Length: 194
Image (cartoon, rainbow, N blue to C red):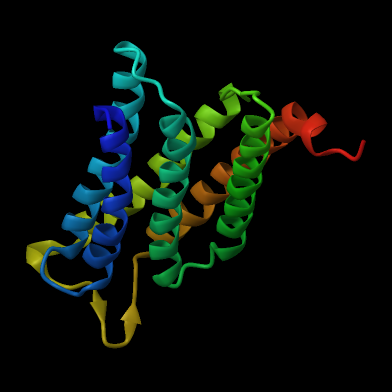
């Protein structure tokens, strides 16, 4: 297994660590969550860059790299939903898009075709990573002196964080939806009734 594929597997390993860091209430757990999240995002950029630069692109990487990205982002979104923010609808729409695109890409690979990433898909990935990353960063900053900001009465975030999550997730959701339509258009010939 080459280095880019190992980095892809590493991103899968980051998922349970991200969950544990976010959900176990210990001192500085949001700082740990943010660091794990940042490492996962960097690994996404790193594996693709290494694969292209050193001609190490493999069928495994083509299939599992986007799956690792989707699983990692789903984990981040589930953590934010668990905090009680009412972003469930937009996150669910984003996840539907992710699985739809994954299905179209798998159908294309079976037919020996490749549906390349488009500008909307790249923008979607960047926006998703930034949106969740900023939320984790703000939570880390709010964790003053290691105090746990989730109390027995539940999570009580400042109003600006709630507003940020609502606005940022809906903007990201729209871009995600548009990019999904583009992938669907590009792969429609693979799924339409003949």
